[in-house]
Length: 345
Image (cartoon, rainbow, N blue to C red; front, side, top):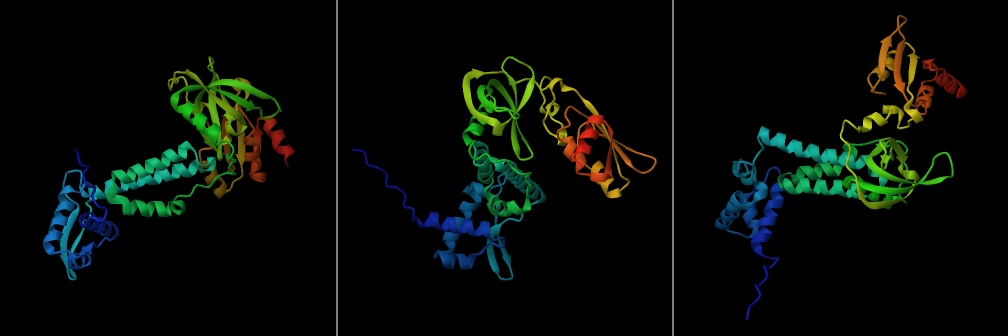
């Protein structure tokens, strides 16, 4: 008759003592003074040497890539300590790389925080935890970064939309996007009460001004259109997949207007916008230090004013942007922009 193996007791003194030592090494840069360690753990010096050997030879969290241990025994004026080795320059660069990754993930989570608890947020959280598992030797540093990341890295949202009631919609869209899966959506048009149904090939989930938009093409067509997620009534994944287009055939950059939004006029008609800004140093610096539109160009006029030119397919977002500069800007062209700005004065 087979007998069951007696389970290892959780109060195993070796496991408990090793856990205490690891915690002290991770939380205290100075380490743990050996005589105080032996006194607190109730162990003899011979047992301590056994623990030290286990940490140096068999504990993967304290091993460098070259196999050497990060645990050392050092003496100073107060006594002999067990501590983690001061990292070399190579180690510091490697640690900083991991901290940067965690910071980048946290910033990504902030970018999509306005959509609520979604699969995307969970995936980013899991990726952060995975980095902590990969480099357990950095858990103290990682804990510091995560504890203060909300203040060290702060993303100012632009009047975020409320997606609290659309978690299932976002989840289905996100999953379909990753799987190249065709979807059917019920969509509410922006300028009417009409509801339409589209069968789409989702290409890009885009975040702009704390809002989510889907760039997609109708099944069987090449033309790409923009759909605001807050106007999607329902999503139905279909048992059908499509081939994601090559970069030469599709690039989301071609379907945006830089800082001036995502709105495309039918037919894609481009308008040349020419603006003249006042001769103010702060104003010219603010304008020229930013990328407002991929086609922008600047020219300094003889009287010191700054002329800005760019081509857009929609003036929807250009109008309020120009108005925000008040009397500091004059519209040279097009005439419809002149008229639209004048109406708001």
